[in-house]
Image (tube, rainbow, N blue to C red; front, side, top):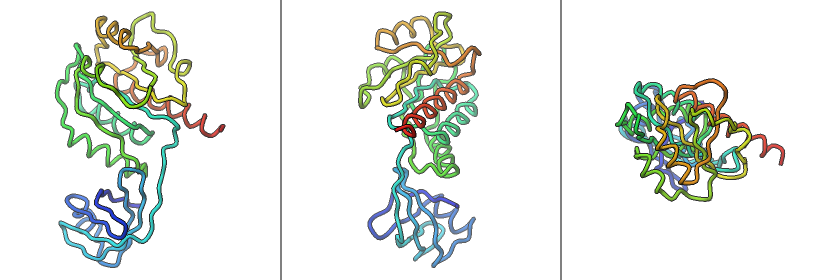
Length: 241
């Protein structure tokens, strides 16, 4: 099933524009009368019938709609230092979107080798992964933030706050610390890990140290492991209830 993304949907009509319209008309050769599937990024699933089709705009009549919800009870927010090789960070975004995540913040740390990201490209990767995996709730991608500024933000809810670092005294696994019925923020540092000062500052801001296993993981691998662990525990709790 091919999914198309649009935020231009009302009770009766929907519209595709830009790349979505071109892909629909020029690549997949859809014409007036064809029925296609739409998503709005907020969990809304729609079936629409094309009533007008050009390479720049596709208009549809809404035939049916259905609302999807997250399979987790609580919100997952990962703050991750982008890798020097941006393709690795993009890989993380793709896999986290497929697995399930609510919010992502790229963070700039003292040892970060990458100090700039291109949000428009990253959002396209997230959208493509969501469409491919039929995950119709798009995660929020926040602007890149310095770690100190991130600590000062007031995030919604009363989340659990964890930091995954590589210091020797960090031995309690996320599996043991995470409570699946509460929102959670997890910090993942750059290739050189968080600095001792950053780790100390995280403790002062209420972050609890956690381990992601005995192996020393790459940044993007650690982020995917954290994402999968939270989803696995969150899904299990929901199924039990």
